[in-house]
Length: 429
Image (tube, rainbow, N blue to C red; front, top):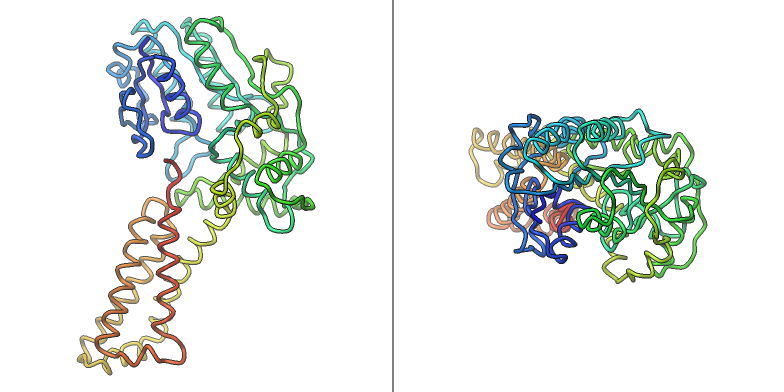
């Protein structure tokens, strides 16, 4: 069977592609870009922005020759890089229409429990609209609604759980008593395989969730034990702090950063994750959180990731502020900056031009580091400009290395921090 998989390099989609390839299915993997890590040559990769495919005609060539479709594409909240309604509703509705015309045998939709807290959010409203359209279409389908998905890898909410678990000395948790049900990644990918193999009946609408639920604080505590860390007290974040974190994360979303702390996630977490699918038809058997973690022992790389996860925004924020402040200070003290250039042997006109250009370059780099689509190039530019500053000053005024304020020495740790930022820049493999 030839299967088109949407969102094929995502947290769930990447695992679904691997599961289906291993099971002998022919896989056409559709994503914005092919993953660089662990390529699967048995899968045919197609690069496309799903949110732009909003007409049935846009999908005609993509579904041609396929017998089934698995939709793993999704986004938590709209921002600079995502249009949730276009991705989760409009594109899926257009795909369903194209699939019906192409004679697709089965459409497997990875959705979510769409009732309860957050039901009115764009994330769940668009999921619900796509589900309802699929049910009305007459197309043979299976809808799978996993709770909080936990697996070997981590992304989004599962990555945040690990980060909170590794917090030094305590465990800060918003809504610590909120109830959570989890779903093993293996149960999700296994359900997709079973649906395509005919072992799950067409028309099924199934929740995938652990048989028991957990307090959110307990989930984080179990992850802390999994990381091999000593138990620590849980500190409940006050409501205003959780709201502030959500608002700040939303602002970062406008700059292209996909934080799991955005207001949509906060709203859903506050009302319980997976709890509102409790009375729906449930796929059995489903693994418990203890079983999931035991099946995927943690390594030191997991501990490094967990500790770096919350440091990542601090690192990028520090670098952005450093470069903006450097340029702003140079502009505020423009006369002194230009005079320094003159002392290095430049003419008055040249010194003013160089002082203005370097100050504006610093500010531009700082602003670009803060914007996710520009950040990688900005970090490379920061390293290059640091090298120019160090080389030029060493050639023209080597005595600056002995300056008591460490004018040149301070550039080195900033450059090293930029190297660290480049190393942890990627969100996906």
